[in-house]
Image: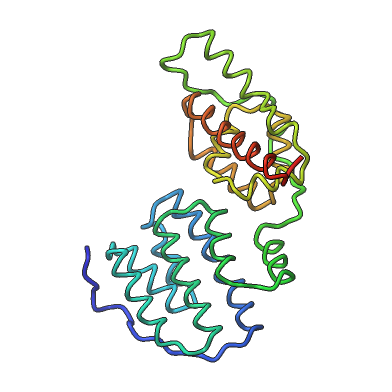
Length: 263
């Protein structure tokens, strides 16, 4: 469907917004966006239909209704951008831009962590408020071990196309995950900044208990929970896909080491 049904409110009522109100509204919208995106990634966009009706922000509600109804994303983007263009108040303009990006990000099915940081980057918050948002949404500092961490068995991997000796050699290397085990916690967190969580989920599939504990210790409770859900939803993956994901992490570590950002 590419046309816009006549049931959408295509006008916008501008409000004057101060920095305090902006921060409050932004905190709410980013929480809702991450929650809805998590559900969308697991169950599909149509699963959001009932949730949308409980949203307070009209533009967020209307944008999500359109993508649920399969309106062309280019049209959704244009409609929301046109409405924003008439807003004069700088905080309201910035806030509605964030709302639009949340809608587009949910449509894309962005990785939850990436969606969070994309929206955070648009907010242009002072460092203190940015840290507050991170603590509130991601439950930092990172101090949560993974559930069931007593289980030392890596997940079952698909090895089709690999001979037995090659598969066992790859499994041993991926299980140990030496590239991560040699890093301190602060350096691991720097690596996470440049890493898609889907790659991290794949990399963790064959990893052993110690490697998983180290990774989850450096994730917030919320991010750790999302990561476990992503890994469970992903199901068994091919051993070579896990190997490629760990190589992505190794490449990031090498780049950061060469730049002097990690030791």
